[in-house]
Picture 1: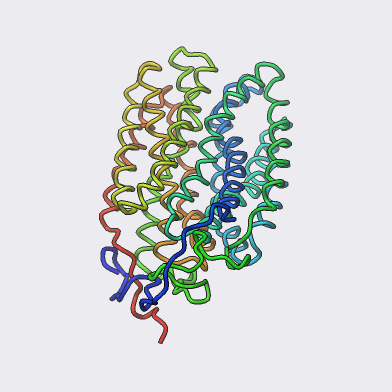
Picture 2 (picture 1 turned 30 degrees about the horizontal axis):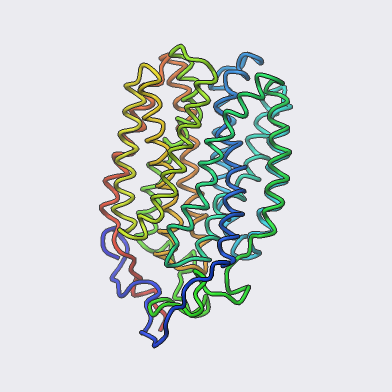
Length: 437
């Protein structure tokens, strides 16, 4: 593969097959893949709605318990690291056992973890419930949902993943203000368990629609009656990588490093932006609305970036998004009022949302559909675990300097390096020593 070291000499692209004299029928309007997309959307709405509401609870928890922000953010960092790492397991389990079981079991565990967090009275209980139990449940959401959608679509892969993943951004838009309103009425200890119970029920209801791939129902990707000329007929015909083969390519490690660099900073706004707004003299509701602004940008980013990447390619789209994220973090660092914070929040949401949409589609393009869950899971496990570092480091910087501005500038710098790595990505190629005889 050209562009990254260690890729080896290459020959044609993944999935390339001899031309076949077949035609593609128009997609049916009731293609089951869109039900899978809707179910994935709802699961991610619930899971990330809970997760991205965390920033709304920080000041309430510290005022009530006397714990510092760093005390609260360290269990949250454990949670992010653990659920990211366990995504390699949930991705493998999705390929092996199907997403229906994985998502259903994860829903129950996630609900127990968040409900227990709301009832915690000691830091060790927060580590156990949020840092461990909720993390195990959360690992059964992003990778299983997006990897399943990747298996259902080829030509419209970016569009479908964009719609599904916009569930997380929509949850980010809707749930934090709801959480803030409930806190004002019943307090944070009642709000978190109530949200956990409702979320668990919704995720369980959606899990029954999660079918692993179209071949299980006698269908083809995208709802085609017959696949296009350049597309393999089925998973049995498709020239897909195994997870072990993927790890032997330079592209895998380029993708890994790139997303590790951008994700190391990605949860800093989610965990600290609401508190930063309050530090500038704004209300808690205004802080929660900043999180909703991120969600608004995320919805727009996911819904537009997926189709855009299908048209212009993943690499230029990803470069644009990382550049946008640099501008957004710089805006946070320079902000002195809501008039600067809101545009930067929307910009950050669009950039973050769009870039996360690119990852599953990029993996599907490069490595095929068969082991998409395991490969996405492995990248997410390592690169996503880096996201645990940012919020805790930002909290430590705040405790030392009483300001988040240095943390925001460091976040911008990390994305600059990630942007430089985009130049190493090349069209998908299969190393010659991995091509079957």
